[in-house]
Amino acid sequence: MDNIVVLGAGYAGMTAAVGIAGRGQRVTLVNNGARFTERLRLHQVAAGQQLPKLSIPELLDGTGVEFVDGWVGGIDLAARTVRVGERVIGYDRLVYALGGVPDTAGVPGVEEYAFTLDQAEAVQVTDTVVCGTGLTGVETAAELAEAGHRVVLVGRAEPGAELNAKARAYLQRVLGELGVEVRRGEVVKVLRDEVVLDSGETISTGQVIWAGGVRGSELARAAGLEVDELDRVVTDAALRSVSHPEVYAVGDAAAVRQEFGVLHGTCQSGMPTGVHAATSIVRELRGKAPKRFRFGYLHAPVSLGRRHAVVQFTRPDGTAKRAWLSGRVAVWYKETVSSAPWPSFRRMVKVPASGTVAWRRGGRYTR
Image (tube, rainbow, N blue to C red):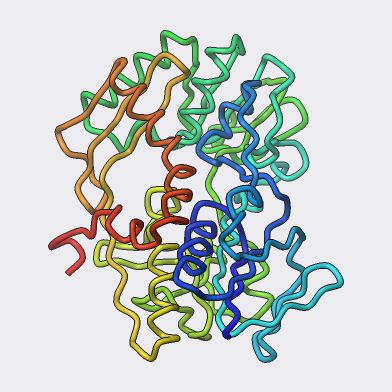
């Protein structure tokens, strides 16, 4: 029987492993750590909240998936092997799902002095600058402010720039009510106790949290896979590596192109790529050609602490519609979305095909 190896047990990797195993194939899942990391909730961890400990082996119990806890040291594409510690694992198909890492290389001082959400520890000081006004930065700033921190949120774009005007105004009003101070500007240097903006302005701080985007791991480039400028594996329409078609790339680790552009890394798009890779690999092993992956966005849910949220509904290309939610219903909606992956994994263990109907294909936006 063919052996399929999945690297990474995040949202996309877990979906792929469970989907493949549920269709009777032999799967080895490699991850550095046995606890599932809820990346959707890392801003809550930063604010000192305790999250449930979700066990990857517990979910995989009874699926037949072999779980290997270890750090991936290298991939030999010619030999079709993966090195994990002292162990070498052979594969017939590989699913590359190692996710993204914080993009810290472009600004001097970030790697030395800034923290990232990936470090998954509570912020100890109460005077914090959050760098990055994207939705991750907004969620982090709001969560910390609600927990009593003095927070400055700084970035080139205004917070909520992706939302429609009314939703954006609501988001900014809540940030103001929480005491978040917003500064516009590009961070050009991070020092031990301050950040420097392109205008020359400096902002003093006890701690810096970097939320300035993500990129792929260097492992793919080092192995010889074709990658883009952010070290994401470049895929064909079926999510196979354009340079090594026996390798599928999913989630944040992949540069997945649709008619409207390259997908940005989210759980919303990551889990569907995992489902599609699982289905496609099984089709190939049965002598059939894989189908083209199609995906369209549905929404952008944003938590603003535990008591506020905003949900922006979108067109398949991610642009904002008129419809949006706020208040308690938005808090409920966001929490439902954040809690959905784990039950989805359990459902797919029992009914692997259930994942294939769970996402928007994009209609005319992806034809």
